[in-house]
Length: 521
Image: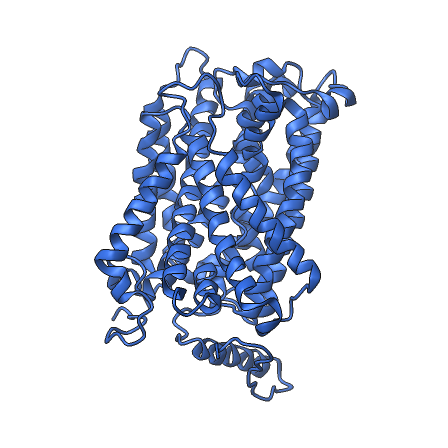
């Protein structure tokens, strides 16, 4: 019998009436449950539910994300794609988020998807299913982080170009900004005890910036765009003859902002009562994300004067051009873009937290080459510093892709979405094999609605893998091709070589003489 089979009940220590003692007892209970899974408590539970929601929301930061990737949506369907595409993607995300929340509530572990796959898959294939899931999840996290940094690099160079109209943007300018931003945000994840405060601060910064821009743009725009334009203008400038195909490839824009819903699950060992708090964080991310992104987009679109100017802006940043159109003032547009940029920095810091925790958790089960170093936790800083450093280094290398392809941003977004959804779908399929009623149910369990959410997750994963592999513009040329299929091939190649060279012998091999986690002395 699997240790998470039906009607498993965890033993709990009697609580104390004293608040401090109760909190300590909760942490002890969490550590005891973690021990039942075969792991030790190596990171402190520093996160509260608010800071957890902060880091989960800042990870997606939907209104920032919709701004950073707006060029894809605007080109593929104008305002219609973003306004209605957001509604559709929110529905999808509720299904995906609910599927993750159920599993996180039942089996809270920093490994997230790959841990669930191991516990639920047929015993004969459990290690390989878990290994696949871990690699796809980690690769998706790396590409998510890379796409955020690239969006920030384009924003900072775009602001300079708006202030200096004679300046011609070159790819190397964006790559240089990319590397500086990636390193600067790397520093924030080097001290674990600071992360909850940083998460709360970035949450407040995001919401305040959102409100300032939400009010300023429509207030300053004269004249306003019509409601008919905002809710009914379809524009296809992608080169695709089929408007339907253009709309589908453009869904990458709203989909990207909700792709990283697993981020909170990888902090399960740093928050008390994760079986309750992780699902709250996941579903709150979807809810807050939809409200902020949809209202933001509608508000911004009332400030558009010339849609073609947004698509063909010399800055390469449509949202910056939109701010400029609305305010008719260069300095004002740069100030608003700066607020968006700072919000994006918070998103990147959260991305770094996410990818480092996933790398660390996967390494302690020996899922990655060099796991004996990647699985170390620095006890002084209370962070997996080596995993964090290596992950950020890989992100830095990926930034160089922009030198060879102007559509690198699109390819990174697509790789992020598809790889992450595959990592969500595998444990859901394993759950179906095990039987939804044959596992221990956590506090968050939706019954038949959960089954519907699982179906949505599986079908949407298949859709993303197929449809998002098409080029975003036609005719496709060497510099504008969607190279996401190459990304898939490279990830699968690396994963296959590592499995046969090392992983099949060491990954989650409980009989190995190696310890699960090595603490840095």
